[in-house]
Image 1 (tube, rainbow, N blue to C red):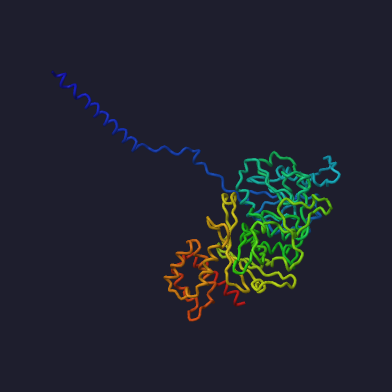
Image 2: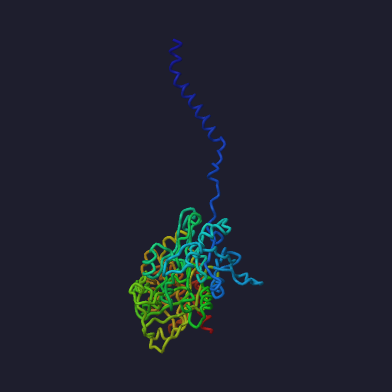
Length: 519
């Protein structure tokens, strides 16, 4: 009888024991110390690539250095750039050496090396061995990339650092570009990076690399306007052999012209020579902007692919009748000989930066006495607004051409705003031009109260386009409709609606217009 009474209680005791153990386990888990993060996860990551991680080795000679030192001063900074000049022989000792130039080294003798190529230059051996000597003779601590070029190569260091940041220097990388001409590529290799334009080698590859370069071949002569005004989307990294081309700006020496270009480089290096095309349909104009250099205004509507072709203002380096010497490795178009059938060109005048806002002015370059449409004939200056182009590594990998808008109302001054294209935007300025033409077309709309104007904005403009509406309205401030107050009287009310950023840009725009009108 006693045993029968105890048996039913057994499951209850087991359940109680299980609950007790569960409670103890929960208490243990709640109060147990959290183990430290493994040491490997706490290791600091390598800092991003900077200019300090680049070592520049420049091929020069005692004969060429005096006449090309001005090229070096444009991009080399003694305090921030690690640069060395390799000469063929010592120069005359100078009791007062120029502190703005890089230190020099004399290349090792190459007389023991055989060289039998009849059409080449023996100096190619010395040039090629600079790669090896840079690793063996220089202090390479902290170097991730070895960069090589000639003494007439001008590097754009900010863009170069940003481009090299995409790659792992512990891997084997050989980064450069082929020649613009078909014949040099065919003769030497389509996979060879030509030294005149500069090339980079990762530190891991440089340590195991022996001279791979042949002589540096020159690519083009004469006027390179066609090349610079249709530069590809990739950042401008270098220009080379500039003593064999015309000054890139009219009425300037080569040195002064390059210094003038660097006014834009110093303001926004990532945007230099970036080509943007926009359309003014009301005046039937096509405008091609090569930022920081020149703007071309075409009469009529031109397809974008046609404007991306480089005009053949230049000539091949090898001046012979061989058909191959006249072939290039990029798309070209004919350069019209009649100046009156060419686009009107505006060259860079000045570049100004205010925080991240940048504006550049371009002045008209007059060539010949040509008959133009009124819109083009009266135009004297172009002002371009933009935001500083600071692309991260991901954006550099996948580049997209930006869009631009032209203020529809202009006489002597054309104003252009460069911006990021919308997600679904295929052609530039469609929404902007439609909106402004609509506002101008309905004169009665200027008499509408602000609530109606706000409703128009809400219906026609995406939030990101409000900035450009603000620019347009303030740009039309001098236009009045009979019996109505000036449009600028709405300024105080429009301020309440536009975002603070848009208002700042609009006021910046008004200031620039007034500044030009006061001249």
